[in-house]
Length: 139
Image (cartoon, rainbow, N blue to C red; front, side, top):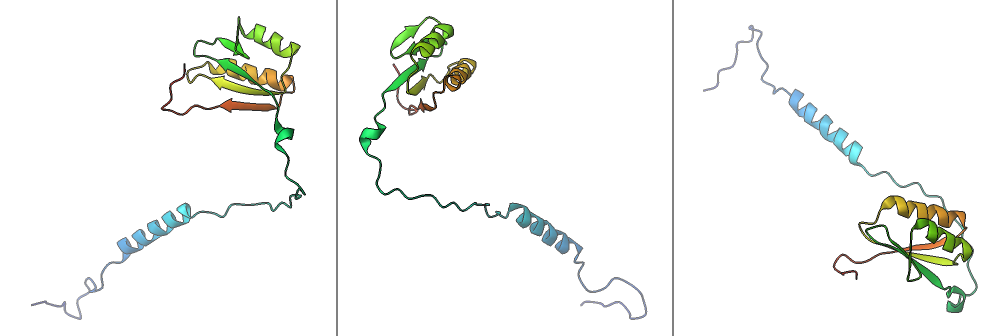
């Protein structure tokens, strides 16, 4: 049988302590506030509409391939280059319109960044980095 405390004796109330419940509610509230996704700020743009799509003949630009292997050896249009300065001289003599960069996965990053700086200096803006799928083998 449940015994109730006498009315005249000050003791604990029969109501449960709600402090732990309030703590959990506030923690969940903070969690939801921090993880709620904010809407992305967007700037509406009114782009002009072209009357006709550009033809394929307008986009046929001869692309030159520059390769860098894992040892830092350069190839320009299939021809091996002695070093980076030789490659730079060739690029300055006959700057290509468009460049494809084929880099080995273990290629030195510093040399790649030097090449990008030279291409920017020469005003070669049409540059693409060729990607290879993980399962394929490069020869």
